[in-house]
Structures are given as C-alpha cells and as structure tokens.
Amino acid sequence: MLTALIMAGGKGERFWPLSTDEKPKQFLNLLGDNTMIQMTVKRLEGLIPIERIFVVTAAKYVNLVKEQLPNLPNENIIVEPVGRNTAPCIALSAFYINKRIENATIAVLPSDHLIKDEDKFREVLKSAYEFVNKNQDVIVTLGMKPNRPETGYGYIKILNDIERINNNTIYMVEQFVEKPNKEIAEKYLKEGTYLWNGGMFIWKASTILKYTSKYLPQTFEVLAEISAEEDFEKALKQKYEEVENISVDYGIMEKTKNIYVIPCDFGWDDVGSWTSLERYRPMDEKGNILNKHCIAKDSKGNIVMANKKVILNGIENIIVVETDDCIMISSKEKAQEIKDIKKMVI
Image 1 (cartoon, one colour):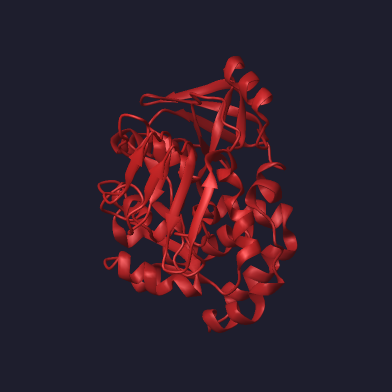
Image 2 (tube, rainbow, N blue to C red):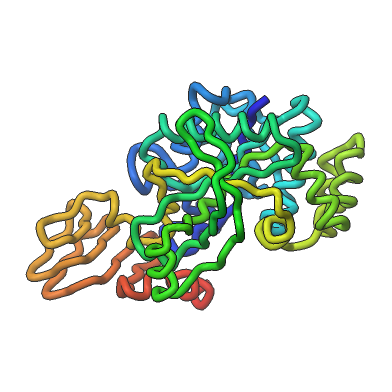
C-alpha cells in the first residue's frame, strides 16, 4: 500500500532571515497562497489519502504541522527528539509506518520543494510504486532532467534503461555525484547522462529497514529496540541519541547497487535560495522582484522582501530582506553563503 513520508525537519538556512529556527522555510508562503508543506500534501490528493500521509519533524515544529495540516491525524506526526540526519530519520519512520500499515511502500518526499505539473508527478509516483512492488528489494529515486549547469544540486549518473511503465522509463543508477563546480556541471549537462538528485525515494518499508540493518547495524539495533518498547515515545526520547548521525545518501545509497531512477520533467525546483524566486515570482521590466511599497530608480536585477518602503537608486543584483529582528542585504552572487552569515549572527 502506497504511503508518503514528508521530511519536515529542515531549517532552510539559505532563506534566512525570513526562514528561522522557529519557523523554517517549509512553513512559509514563498510562492503562493499555501506554505511549502501545504503544497507538498496537496499535490498528493487523489493518489494518497491523508490517512496514509506521515510527517517526520522536530518537536519544536509539531504545533506548526498541526496548524498548517489540520486534517493530518495526530498519530501520523513522527517526532525526532534530536536531529540525526536523514538515514536514522527515515529508518525510524519506516519502523513506525511498518507497524501501522501492512506491506507499506513509502514515497519519501521533501516538504519544501516546488512541482509545477502535479498530474505528471502523481503519474511518476504510480510508475515507481508499480516497479517497487514487482521487484525485490529495489529503491527507486526520481531524477530531474537538467536544463542548466546547476552547481547547487547533487547529480545522478544513469546507466541503461531497464523497463518502461506507463509513460515512464526506469534506468539503473550508476552513481550519485556530489554538487559540482560550474565547469563540471556544464560537462554533465552536455553529456546528457546526468540528472539532478531531487531527494525523493520510493521503497518498501521492509527494504529500507533491510538496508539499514546491513549498512548501519548500530542504528538499526537502537531503532529496533525503540520500536519494540511498549512506551514508544519514552524509549525514543531515551535512546534516539544513540543512532549514527549520517545522511541516507552516505549511509545507504552509496553502498547498495539495487537503485533505479525515473528521469522526470514535471517542473521541479528545490527553491534552495533567494535567487531561485526569480524563476517564479513576477518581475518588473528591469528584472526586479519588489514588494508593493518599493521604489526602484535606475536599478535592476534586485530582490526585495520587506514590509517597509525600500528605495533603490542605481542598485544592481542585491537581495534585501526585512524581518522584525533585522534587515539583511546581500549580493545575489553570495546568496548561497547567507546560511554562513546566519551562524555569525545567531
């Protein structure tokens, strides 16, 4: 049975100072009337009912999840006592879901990405679900067809195609590749055998638990003990710190060979930094994204997110963000480094 696990514990540091530790990116309205996590749940309508959607998050965000997803059953919120990266978080969730839904297949989805063609997205998930359920111990990931030499994403190198399901072709994965520099990213784009890693996976709960046991045995043992306890929440608080702090990419994906990918073209974007808004927010004739109070004279290519009146005079390619606590001004060229500034300030 197909279920969804939405990962909602991230801090969205590159959208600081609007995205904070108290209310990070996934709970913000950045691209429309709904928050990012609301958009994530909404695009599953008609494929996965709310009763089979689970959200894993930090304790401090539980109230935000309940407030923004009022129809989500309380028991479908999985709470990490402390952050231990994605591998233990996913394995914990697999244990939790496996006890509640028999023979569960899990679509692991980030809570803060944009997908424009939601019908196509659901079609791809259906194809991945079919492939997973007729092949033993496979992992399917979704790779995005690149349209630019992006240095902010990891990549997936594909091998030969294996099967076609509905309108989607499944390929064997050769390897996962870390974020490249611009020269290498241009090479990947030209070669045509690399996809962006969208951080979405489809697998049976039993499969990811099997691979966790094989490659991260200490983490598996701790989580198995927690899952077996009658008082699950108490055991989780007492023992969860003992799991390894490691990502699912390093802990499992780079070690197993039974991974497949579906190349996707449904308008995906991880909306990873302030400059990514330029792809979706309306601009004036000089390429500025401005709040309604802003005045721009002889200025171009700027992004302004502020409630107060901001006046730009002869300014190019800067980001201005106002919150109750501060005003952040950055060059667009340094947008990826905003998270480092946050560490200096807080």
